[in-house]
Image 1 (spheres, helix red, strand yellow):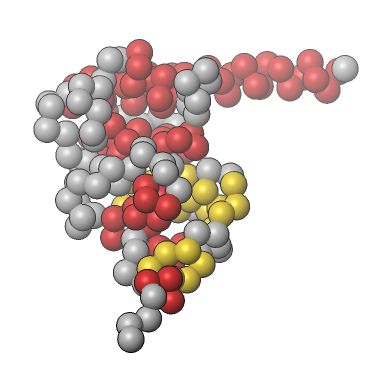
Image 2 (cartoon, one colour):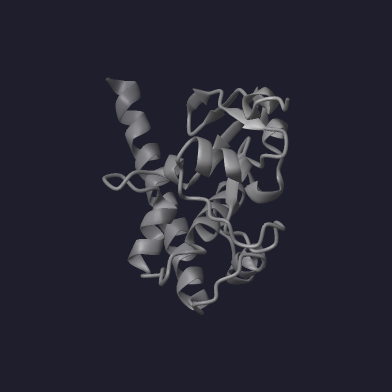
Length: 178
């Protein structure tokens, strides 16, 4: 008699998009499997399965990572952010808004990786040069050829983030006086 498939599952406790979860996953499951199949998140995409195309990019503890090559068990106790965790339709993250403003998406398949990688870059480097943007995104493949618009989108996002920082700085003295 063979053991039931459930016998090969183990619970992985982590935080996804700010919410604690503990799905039961198989020993061979990747983080991408966990996110898409167990949690129903469709931001990260399956592209190459080798961590080379960038379609599956998420943040693990704030660092861009390729979910297709990370064992699900390897993220136990960690925090994962997906595209769904960046912003909402009503209040998009500045990087998402930058991509909208620059009309940088065509088919959208690579978009997850581009946005997550760009957001990680801007968190580390608020004012990247065009060369820095191109270097950062070089390992995210886009077959539609929207690279010029994608670079513009990241530059627009940097501007939006700076505007938000400036607005916060202007509001801080007013809050202190109140």
